Image 1 (cartoon, one colour):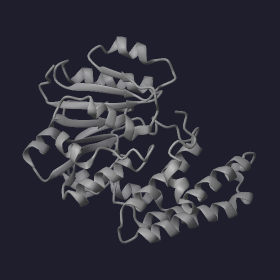
Image 2: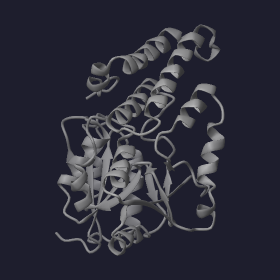
Image 3: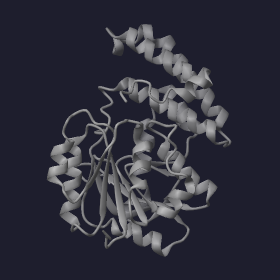
Length: 320
C-alpha cells in the first residue's frame, strides 16, 4: 500500500497502552487512513493490552516483538519494516495538535542541508517544555553537582526569542519524542545505536547528523505537539532505571565521541556520584530506603570506573 504523504510514523511501545491509544487517536483525527503509514514496534509489553489496540486501530501496523531491547532497537525494527521515504519517530505519549507535521517533510524536501527536523513540545496549557539542548557540556555537570540552577537553564531554553516569535532555529539535539528525517539519511547513520537502552541515543543520532554529515537539525516552531511529561518512564517509580541509564547513556556518548569538554564532563559526573555517596547518611530524603539508594549509587559509580561494566550493562534494572 502506498501512502500519499510518503511518511512512515514509527512508535515504540512498552506497557504504555493508555497513552498509545490517545496518540493513535490523534493521528486518526488529523490524517485519513491512506495519508501516512503508522507502525507500532511493541517491545514485548507485559500488560496484555496490545490485542485491544490491534482491534481498535486496524489501519495501524503492529509488530509484537519477543524482546525488550530498548528504544533504539524498537525504532530500528520499525524503520526496517516501513515503506516510506520519510521517517517520523514518535513517543507513545505524544498527542498531535493538528496536521502540521507535513511541514516537516516539506522542509526536508526543500532544504538539502536539513538533517533532523522537529517541532516545539508543549504541555497541557500550551507552554513549551524541555525538548532540545546543546550537546553535553561541563556547565550542566556543575549544575548537577551544586543541585541548583537547572530550572533556570531549562527556562532559558524554552523561552528563547525564536520560540516566542515563531522563527525556526537550529539546535544541537532534540528530545527523541518527535524526530523526522529522510530514510536515506537514517540508513547513512546506521540507525539508532543499540548499545543504549534509553537516553542519549537521540543525542548521538543528532550528533552524527550535525558533526559527521554536516546536516542542520532544525526546530520548526510553527509545529507544536503535546507530551505527557515522563509518561513513558515514571521517574518517581523507576528512579533506579532513570538514574542508572541517564548516566550510562552519557558515558557511552562521551566514550564514543571526542569533543573538547569530554574529560571535564567525566570528572564532574564522577564527582557528582561520589558527593552523593558521602552525603547519603545525612540525606533525609532517602530515610528508610538508604540501603537501596546506596546500591544504586554504587552501580552508577561502577559505570564510571569499569568500562567493561559500562559496555555490558544495557539491561541493568530492565525486564527483557
